Image (cartoon, rainbow, N blue to C red; front, side, top):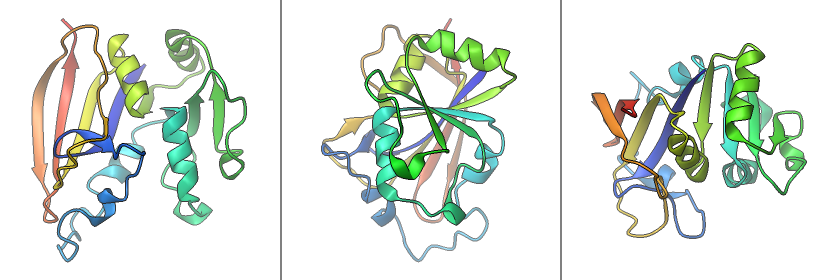
Length: 187
């Protein structure tokens, strides 16, 4: 099964402030930029390419805190799995949208593949790091916001091995965000 990352970071590589805040994503860049050609910076195209999502518990809790109305739910009707060894039920506002899972990641990915899933969206810093350490991520799209936080939750945690990124593509958006796409090579 193909596993892809699509995530935003600060220019210095943080996915959130030390307390988990992501408000800087909405205040960074040129607010008056003409984004009519690609208003969501490729997110709709990406989300249309996946058939399931695997995220960490903390990522799920951040999404729950947004309390997104049904008509604005960005993940369409894709099946979402949240990894947790402590929670068995998602927050009330994600009930029916998120299924809690625990246990071995490789077993989960194999089960999803056996159930017919072909392309998973992997989200959340610790989850992405775990998938990389298991050599499961195939490609990454990282959108850099034009802000330096100086401290926070980094995208990548401790890796067990170097990871070679190749076939680089980059897009510079009118709002000063820059998106980098890579294929991951573990050889």
